[in-house]
Image (tube, rainbow, N blue to C red; front, side, top):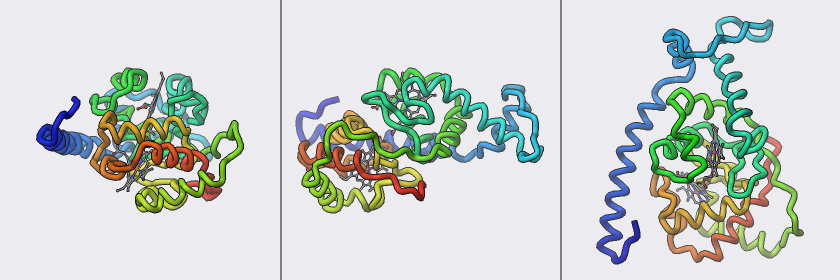
Length: 247
Ligand code: HEC
Ligand code: HEC
């Protein structure tokens, strides 16, 4: 969908807003069920994997949630780690690190991929195979992965470019939502320490409309920012240190 005039742009924006509302309703329904209750109902229906044996450190009452976590840790290692890296520390260009990402943000994005609202051939193919339980299970598991320090830079960090990036992040209120350390929270993703080329693609994607976003927040945030400033913001965010305090 490419808009050619302001009237088309306005109706595009309208159509987008309506889709956002519809998606929000379906996502709200998905988020309403807690994962604990889910594991139990899956087990009752016979669809859950067999529960792990309770151990001394895991009281029997906590078994369903523990079983779910172990199951998704295993599935993450066999399915997701090939692209996203062991423990979500991606070493693949174009593939984001998931370590340190927030559960609420993750479940939302998995949902958007599955519903075809966010599109990437590799990731959409995976998301199409996931059930609601899977969305919750993977999001809960990823939420437990500690953030990784930014990858060692291949070239020395340019202090002037970092200062410019920091100033842009203030000026455009990126820090207002993503936090001064860019660690995000809840539905706002961690961007500090994320892969640079992925951040760059994401920012350009929001600017050109290639990536719709769950809300208009990012589209509004980047509109009017020149492409070279988006590159500087990606450069800066990728190199912002991860605080030892974690989440
Ligand atoms: C074949 C490679 C591949 C596999 C396997 C894969 N992913 Fe992805 N994933 C990607 C790519 C590439 C992107 C970035 C897509 C984009 O640029 O929009 C992505 C994006 C994501 C995102 C969005 C992250 C963000 O910061 O917005 C989440 C969450 C995610 N994947 C979770 C998973 C989970 C959970 C699994 C396993 C069930 C998985 N992925 C398996 C390639 C993969
Ligand atoms: C009003 C709050 C808000 C502001 C301001 C904001 N963001 Fe965001 N940002 C979000 C939300 C919410 C998302 C999740 C995207 C979605 O809607 O699906 C996001 C997503 C992103 C992503 C994608 C991360 C990923 O893992 O895919 C990047 C990169 C990003 N923001 C960078 C920025 C930068 C740089 C700025 C300043 C120019 C900025 N944001 C300003 C709220 C905000």
